[in-house]
Image (cartoon, rainbow, N blue to C red; front, side):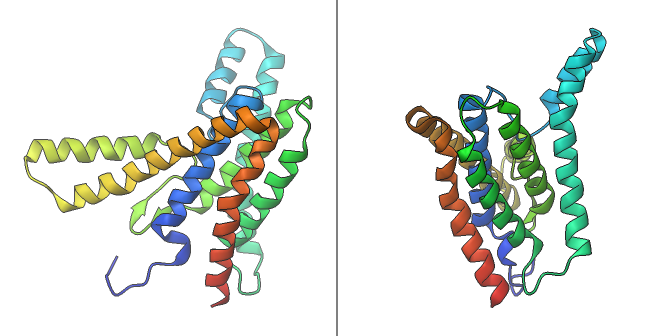
Length: 224
């Protein structure tokens, strides 16, 4: 990206660091108090679906189709809505952040003894839309809900620096960008685990703090 080109607000580095912090918080939350599963991605559920099919456990296979379908629908919604609707001076990523705030508030009101699948599917849906909406930050392709790609980029960059035995500025910048995302995800999960010990299912409401900060900033940018 040219130095003279202004980075759009929704692509700024701090926005992505905040989003992946929230994703880490979701992961800690669902693991600690909402069924002991990780809802940010679907690789595990796809593997479990295959295992259920292979063992002939058809009901369990159908069960795993629920979160997988929710994730797929979230991707589809995030593709269709921005193309079909035109919001007055509001970008889709801003609207998505507002939707996420509303859903997080609702999740916090769901009792601890309610079926965990309600919260899990909702977070599946949120993460799918977020993953498909926030894709690029300051010239780097980024994922805001899981870490595999960030680990790959950091490992590749470190390998190239060690192999060439020189400090390549481009690779250093990649390590800083993607390494920061990894650290922010871990921090989000750490904070989530600590708060879940204190507040149980209500801990999800603490994630409203970064989400509201983000929503206000995106709204301000849209209205400028």
